[in-house]
Image (cartoon, rainbow, N blue to C red; front, side, top):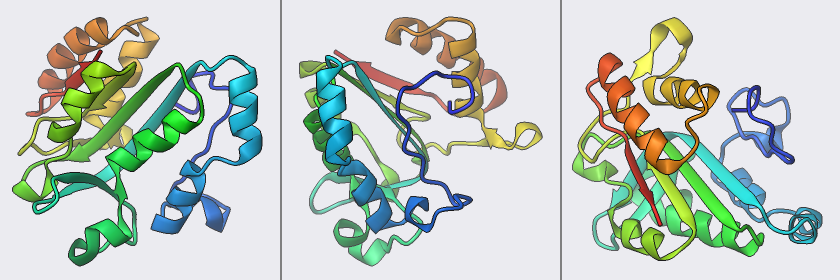
Length: 192
């Protein structure tokens, strides 16, 4: 996404980031999602636009509060709400930036009852100008493609963008067919 898509502003948190404050820890992700005021002001001045959030990693759901979480590298399963970033929080922060449309893409395993990201949020997505894309269904695993050192889903997502499939409907059709050729996982796209 960084190399091929032309985004105006990019905040990238990776394990390999040369800057310590852009490594994917709980505190760093919260700081980045706080979006510096100058970016919020510039985004609003430029007339909104689309705001994309892409997460590749692990996800979880805390059974007793029905909240979905993205797990940074320092997350603790014993304290999800205190060490992980909720999907609701991500969406709230992106809304504060003044975006016309929000695109949230999550490439994370969902193969057990501890990793059921997404269900409570889907109804809310239908009421807003948001697109939520998951690499797989609940109880499925999001697979890696060794030959390209990337997840199958992300690999096929980029391929879809290269081919011009950018509407949710076209992405959904393409990803359903193409991901199934390489992995036993089923992408989900919710929009509205």
